[in-house]
Image 1 (spheres, rainbow, N blue to C red):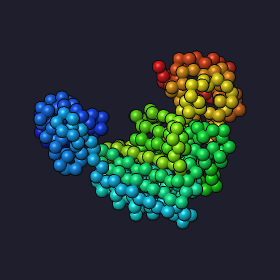
Image 2: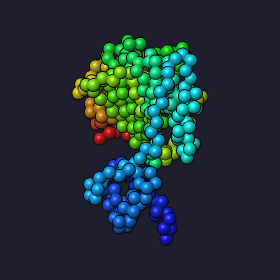
Image 3: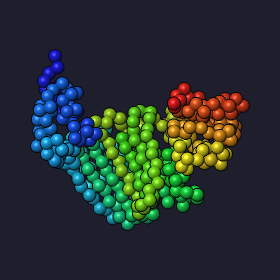
Image 4: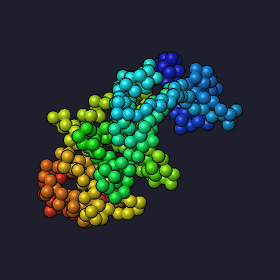
Length: 358
């Protein structure tokens, strides 16, 4: 027999986790899920509103519930060569969120804030950084904004890229920095994989990466007509997240604890509806692969590729870079067929994936 207190705790947790998706009918959804009356579920909703965990607007059937941000603070910091990111974390951000936050989530927040504020200090060419911190019963959300040159434009300019969109592809690989003497270029790569949701908005480009499970990510890019001066980075993590920063580092390290593995979404190399058919497009994807020993080449949302594109990656590049193993991953049937075609003459040294996309 399940104890009543356990049902109470689970019902409360269910409401807090689902209210964002079902703001209007959360009472009936919770009642059905737990086999209680709608009036009982409504009583829990009223309790959560009284406790300050939820907000409620409207009346009767038009009533809407939402998680309440019990922390909603904005911090404005001058950016100078003397600005220290760990001081901003220690004196301004950590005191707002550390009470009651699991240690693994706190450490991930510390890592993300330090890395992103460091980028604002050393790369943005901005004179200020604005940090927005929000907490509710379910998640921690942190935004770091600057008014500088913009991250995609900075990378495009310093790396001599034709278009700012190519910066998205390069950022996804990791080990990208416009200051190789002072930085490793690993900050965004690891930070984007630690948080449940990570996004960058700069200029007319918007990039977001959302954690779905251990091996799957939703990666979206969007061109927007409106322009944002500088860069806004959003970090969001569930308070019940179980992974640690250490586990994310280990996932991409080799036996020598070196950042040697990367996961590259091939779709970021596409412009609109164009197909990946040329050797020059392949070389765009392959740029800087020599810095890694293993590359997972993720073909999710790529319906087909051309023979020249596949040949450049799986025969030509392999022959010239035998120390880099490329693992094709989540291939559509046409992509798999083209890779198989060129691999007949490629020999060994190419990893094979057993997971294809439908």
